[in-house]
Length: 379
Length: 178
Image 1: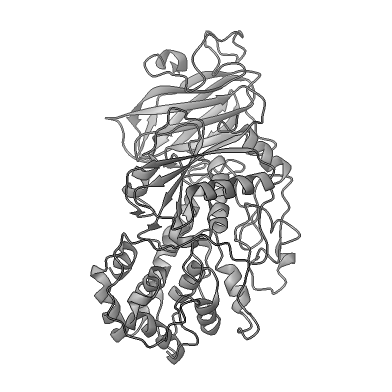
Image 2: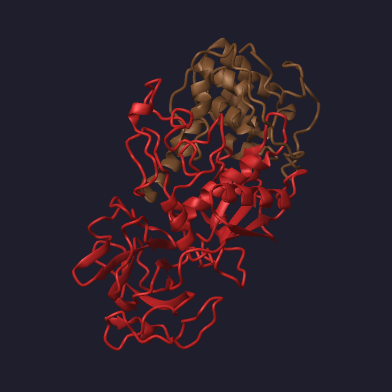
């Protein structure tokens, strides 16, 4: 077993918030190990990990230990190995197991639903009841590829400050992507309005990067786009605008994970991608309202919010205070719940599975808002 | 929903789009409503280059389609086609409803989704698809991609015509043709 702090010497850094001595003594319960992060701050630390091939295929990292301090508000863990699918294979404190990829390889266990993904990430808490407790914590990264000749990185983004602040977002225009007469400033303002209506204060910046206006939705093209903007200020969500997805022209946009590696830029999953041309009206004009609502919905996924209700009305998110639209709302009995059928449940929620035909969807529950306010990108 | 599952559903939905078919008398032009272009108006215009902007100006339409004469299931279909993720799109559609949505919805991508899902070989559907194939340059790229993507289960004639788009300047149409 490796001391995380010892292994971290080469790569450890503090993004944005600056490195300094932790004024608080260790409280995490690991002998001779420092706690993660710094009191009162959001901190991004990195640890180099070595991979070993495992029987049956894939690979696993060494076991690492770190101390979770009592003042930790939220934690985001990311295992990065280029474009390879990775996950937190083990996350436990003594007998308390938070994640076990071996027992749950497909991420079917609530509330994290954590499984392999490029730059696989998990956020704690994921709902009202899933904060990580203080104490000595053991973690191991896994991959379904043999990465034994390569190195990886464990990113630890810790929040040791109260929830709240502004959600930081940067809208990144890729290459020659054209918004017509809609300006990116208009889009920024619409997104700010969506978040404001949902009770979230936001701070949205604008940037541009060279790159293709069209990429495939999956594969190297989209991965390269998500890794293309690397601001000095890492603690933000990146929303990449492209003209369209070459292989999926009817895709509006998508997040890189639920959650994505928020607070870590430059990975293949760092940001959401939204297709401009999928938000054109029947007269050929871009609708910035639709585009802003799509972008905001995908930001919700990237932070870790699931759809409040899925299509058939029998799967819901794991958040206790989001209304559920079950099959009793299926007025036409076609087996699927539309936003209109669910208007007085969660049909107006930003994270409903369908875009509404008849009304806007700009509400979030108290717990949804709190999860956003606990994210490392809100400060 | 777990994320990996969702990713797989996305892939499945992509395959689904290679299944449109059929074609016929156009109920309403697929062209943008403001254009009012004739449905049978072959043009000599070249397809827009891939880099040409597909969007024009800002608008936030509050209008909606007039549903008065729509097939009974068209409104529900239009709602379901508003899935935020393609993995959640319906797998079967009523052709009459899909044709109506493909020609009336105010959101172009919803029209395209409806068009791509037409699998019947009725005269009406064939006319709708033929209209785009005959006058591709005048139609929005998304509709062209929808028709070309749907060639796999259409008649041989339409498949052959759609395959001619393999060298189209827009990568979405080109990808759909392959």
